[in-house]
Image (cartoon, rainbow, N blue to C red):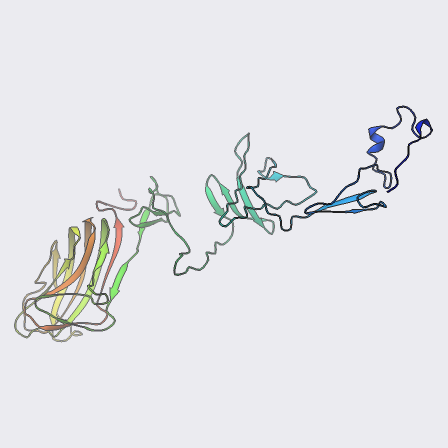
Length: 347
């Protein structure tokens, strides 16, 4: 490019070349230095030599690989929005390494803003993060679970001092929900085993009720549990006898359960039912008889103080090859700690 010549007082008089003249916005009259393109920076220019004349600088973020965690700086207005120059729409990038973290943070030296960070879709706030937690302004659609990842996890914590309407809580023992303020309730989380086929149990005097697993045992942690079971028996000895029920296994604690039991001619025949309330095993849930079929429905509470297994067990007073009927079952659900006295709005 040819050099620009200044030939003294003829072209430039004393005190006539000022900053305002050099900063002219008149197209074709600007005086600038040569601009050279670089990484992610390209230029277009009108001068005879590239980078001179009227120069347009283009910056591209394509392929940009930051070497440090980026930051985003702006001015927070009274509505809690970050204000930036209107000449561009900024994009915030996280780190480039695997599992790197993107952090969004806002501060305000005055009164607290209502939303610390919010994400908008189609002009409407979809998710906001503030002192009240994460607020979803639309339907919350969780991803599908997999063999190694559940869609939603709760971390065990301390329940609210006063239950809040709509709250869901988890204290490491049970799940709870509150339909109205101060009215916390237990969410059932039942462990259950159901016989898919009749189970031929060769009795000496007792046998595990269930055979869906090798020992028919369920492992319980410290806590209070509600349990329920129902079963039918056929093939008992025609010699006068009875049958009973117990909770075996390695757990330590207390129990209390109510039983309705009968010995019958056939399982579908109506018969007298005998009720009992038990705090330990009971080997005679009804008087002895020569009938060979029986049935029982049992419901109660277990307070586990030392964790271990619980094995629902059926006993017979006279040895026989007894069959436990298909769809006999046992289910158990946590209610709270081992000393829980109540859950809910009791007075």
